[in-house]
Length: 435
Image 1 (cartoon, one colour):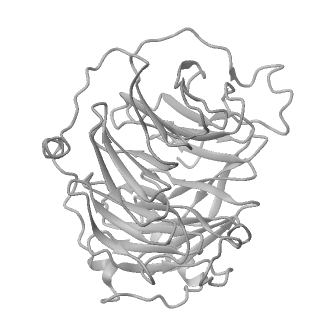
Image 2 (tube, rainbow, N blue to C red; image 1 turned 90 degrees about the horizontal axis):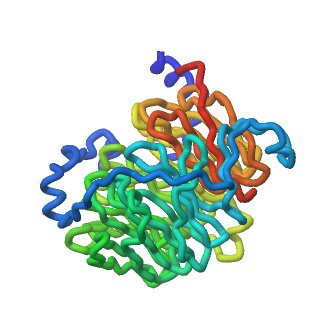
Image 3 (spheres, helix red, strand yellow; image 1 turned 120 degrees about the vertical axis):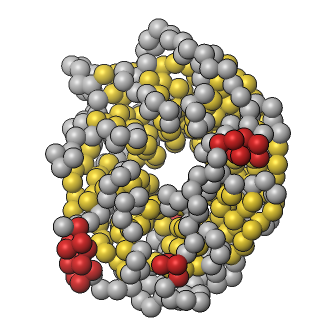
């Protein structure tokens, strides 16, 4: 049934302009895939993994600042419907980031413009502890792969790590102005990019540090590849580097016509790490082979003319790629644009399959694992679910009174957690009749 909808959609959708390939035009079909995740023992040996004692998680009494919804008298100031189940209201300014603990998906960490970060429970909004000590807006927050540690980072470059079960700070470091932060997928290793062009890697909590020196411009986005041995970093000058984390050296550097013609905004990898997708203010999304470091496809929005040069003053008036990602069950990629366009591309044919229009700019998108459903959050404060096979809007969730700035999806796709400029974080229960 999916193949019929694919062929029908392909017939209705005009192909993108001719793409510039490097070498064999069928390179996507012959890209060598990684053999699979490395043996955990090998990883531990290479990364000199740090062991932690696992203690039972403590529980504290409930703190004020959360609201179970709906309750009478609670949402009197809200405009319009509120579909959320829980509202976390301890932040006093815009809430910039959210992450869920990967092991149980029962905890969230949020950071905001109020220089605060909180770890709290999704089921009832109960505060577990505050990640105290930041003196600038907390823009990055996340749990380690095993949910034992939580890291927060603020704009000034102060990073802090707490042990979740003891609620105690175990590590901190002051880097340059922070652009992004991410945990290693299989080890207690933290990576970050800063405005001076460096990418950093620390083993936590012992603090062993390695730096990856980029060009003399901000390292604007980064992602550890699924094998845990490489990372891809994008820079403000449009260059892309794929780093060997053990050796500390670049494996591939894409610049000039191979790179972007403006600052990179986002980067994603497919499930096996064989393909990388990069996005930029130049409105292009580039598909890169992680094995060869070659660009194997370029996607541009059909409604926007190509912009060969984007000056600093022009960025705010131009369209840009804000978020992107790969489907795990079909050869599809999604690209979200500042003008509100969600573009679904077929990687096999490198053609535009669907365009789904939003009323305002897309902030972030996420694919639901094991399905062809894309979640988007946007500046109009709404979460939307799209069927990428048909381009149809499945449902939407409302409740915020300002733009959504970040969101996270639970592993089983039963919960969506959002953060907003209305100073709130919200938990939505996803109900899909098609599931």
